[in-house]
Length: 148
Image (cartoon, rainbow, N blue to C red; front, side, top):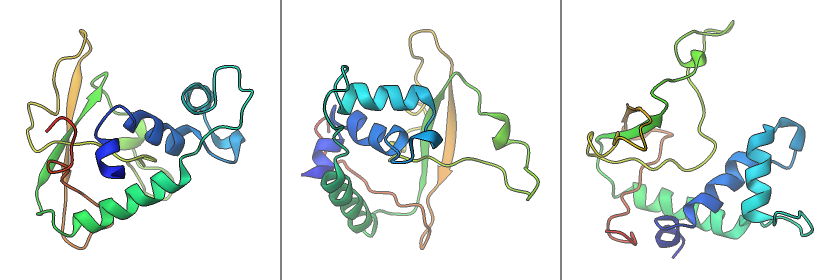
């Protein structure tokens, strides 16, 4: 059920909890914190924000279990603005470059669908290789998806 809910409009709430709902609020960028409170805590901030703890736990469990049935392949994700930040290209003092996605990342096996033009904003396709026995978990949602 959690996987099916994620394939619809609720994905935004589940992802914003992971991106902007940090318990240590000082580490959360202000725009993410604001969006988290709007989606999960009410605009007046009068109620305790919903962190969807159980749903995110079940969703993660479903992705891990479903990933065991997902074949190794290349998937695509569109990056709006057409530019990755400098940290993706220039290594830091310890030689690390790249980034971390704090939330679940939706991708597609169709490169063209992974980079559609969107309201005049350039979208750059990012290629992601899914490998066997990898920390990256990929779960095909076609059999549970709302829009499939």
